[in-house]
Amino acid sequence: MTPDPANGLAGVDHCIVGVNGLEAARARYESLGFTVTPRGRHIGWATANYCIMFPRDYIELLGILDPDGYSAGLDAVLAQRGEGLLRLAMRSDDAGRTDAFLREAGLVSEPVRDLARELEMPDGVVLPEFRLIHPVPEATPGLAAFICQHLTPEIVWRDEWLRHRNTAVAVGSYCIAADDPDALAAGWGRLLGPASVTQEVDRITVETGTARLDFVSAGSLGEEFAALGIEAPVAGRIAGARVLVQDLSAAAGCLAEAGVACIRTDDALVVPPRDAGGVVLSYASGREA
Image 1 (cartoon, rainbow, N blue to C red):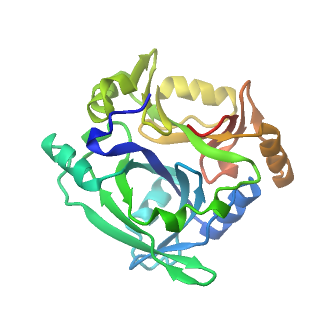
Image 2: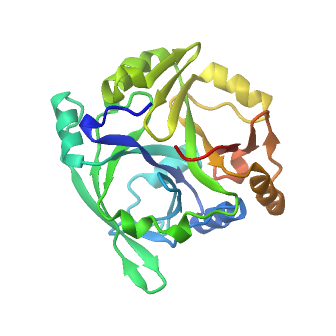
């Protein structure tokens, strides 16, 4: 189902993966079969990124280029938590409408911010532009998130960047460890509508309109990960991303070429976090919604 768009929200826009070595992470994700965009620089900051674009969303690899510069706290997060999924950006089709909705509910305290970054294209630097909303934590319970509206989508959604050797087409879902998933249901129902939330034993699922959010109790998720030989996640963190691919055999071939010993489950290929910048990355058959 698709959430009510009256508040301007339109699903998950992208995830941010914090990495210690940005160039090494780019090379690793390329070896996993992804096409990676040219490098982007955050104006006035010491951080830069590479993006992996899909038709409806993307993955951002974020790292620090100048250790003595301003990194907006990324250096402290990497030192404390290590590499991995840091947060999600929800998409807004109208930041003004989304901001008004959140303000009426008392869920935002900062003004909408305009942001641009430098994208280093072969023929010169271009400037993708965005509008950002940083809601209070109660707006997206159990998940570190902000809201993004793209003002220049044509710059970053280019056909040549949407084609991947592993045939990836979207992030289908994110897995988030939670202390008490049931306690999160009301908050997400308020944001996206009650029909967007499904409660099950030890977990809730949230249909955003793009990627699904699976909030799973840290205990249950720890057992699932242990069965795969993966370290148990910490509650409150985004543990994994499930990437939809059109050809699972092609994805498996990319992993074999990269020398990655993936874990095969009944319906997916799981890449251990050591090979994906701290992310439990899985490939599953599927197409974009």
